[in-house]
Image (spheres, rainbow, N blue to C red):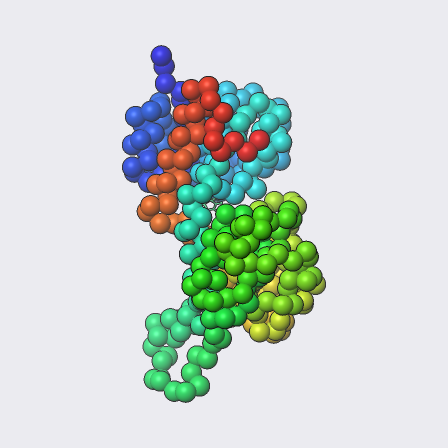
Length: 323
Ligand code: 8YV
């Protein structure tokens, strides 16, 4: 039997590329250049499976007048707001993602951002590297304490829950959560969290806010100027979810005028472009979408994506089918 023809749109960790080559007739992307919309359409028309990432534009219009050969689009990543899920379904293409394997890693990075913003770690590092550190003094680089402060979590899926555990059990933080659906009381008890109904109730009560909801149209600019104004002037916003969830222009304004005290961001509205105003904000910690970037997790994500296409070609519904 001939092996399915599979395309990896980006360079993957070597262990996963090797595993893919054992299982399938694989085409790699050793140059690691994003394919662009036309390249993705061509891939969907010429391969049995396309293994995509967040840098692939598979949004509305991708499937219009497409004659797909691919029957599965396996995303390397949990978030899939870069994929037109309905369009894929209408074109007869199954879409899968890679949940679970990146929960801890992403929550670790959210905690890193929270700590860095609270303790001004980015500013301090920049000062040392610039040769501007003049020595210890009682009033130097004063940040804000984290232990015992209240954390608000928006979106309470697996990553939000992992964040709650770290903050509550590691840092003694009371946790408030806001989520579209009612969270199981057992999960709330396990994570030391209390659910509130609305963002308007949540935001004024928190010292830190961490975003863990999906991106896409439904949550575009969920955090806008009005909602930033509801946060405490001492509060810090952390985003490891998706850039579009925050109105970046409004955030720049809030950071510059003291509406909120700081931000820790791993995701941006127009990646890899970062709003010029954010670059000017010393009170913003900016990371280049690193939430899942550990050796273990990136291999885990790849293996999970391979398992999904293996199940699909074996005639089994993939574990992580999202449409
Ligand atoms: C991934 C992420 O690395 O999984 C996600 O949703 O945001 C990242 O951690 C990225 O999506 C790769 O496609």
